[in-house]
Figure 1 (cartoon, rainbow, N blue to C red):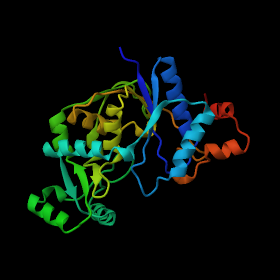
Figure 2 (figure 1 turned 60 degrees about the horizontal axis):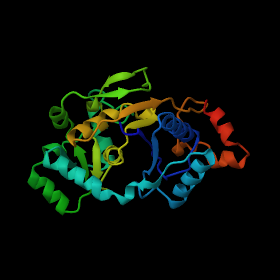
Figure 3 (figure 1 turned 135 degrees about the vertical axis):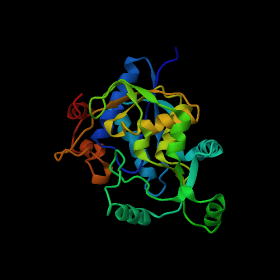
Length: 289
């Protein structure tokens, strides 16, 4: 049996906080206990928000925590061709299509539909895609693309599920409602998810699925906020003939209002805690380890 492979995959769009500390410490300790390897991946596909100084800070913060990983780290922005190849396979299967509505137009479509009945939401609370782009003819799609219209490439969820059939994953952690063991995947809860955009040849869902397979990650350890996204990842694995890792979702670190820590809410950064005299041992206590 090969050694198990774990990975920690932060985005350099802000400084790491206690939630990241918990995740990387769990990954590090599980890898060490299993005699496995820990890889680092820099998820920097969002060119508008990712910054070199945040990537540098990731390395500094992890080293301060006492975390070691196999070099070199994989940077997603260096592997766009891998994602294009995956998209081409899905396109050859007839499973993706371009949609042309702006975010504002999608918001308007949802509001219009909700005058009649509540519109379904995905597990993160975002409305499912309400548009009709899937019904456009190939000629209509090509005319819009040739005219320079921005577009998103979406997965035809119904067709993808029909092709893949029922899916499950092995969960050694715990889901939001106590789910563990063999868990049924429900990718349909996400609707026709975006897999790429005109100017970005991938999305989180596609990139993480391709990268985990490329890096040989056998054990995916991450927060419970990504638990139901695993259904989309299992679907993409099945469609692309990629191996299914074992998953372990862990508890989240929450603020005084019960919200998970987030860069977007300016959760206190590890480097700020370090500057006030907090030690790595203190951080372990703060995250409950």
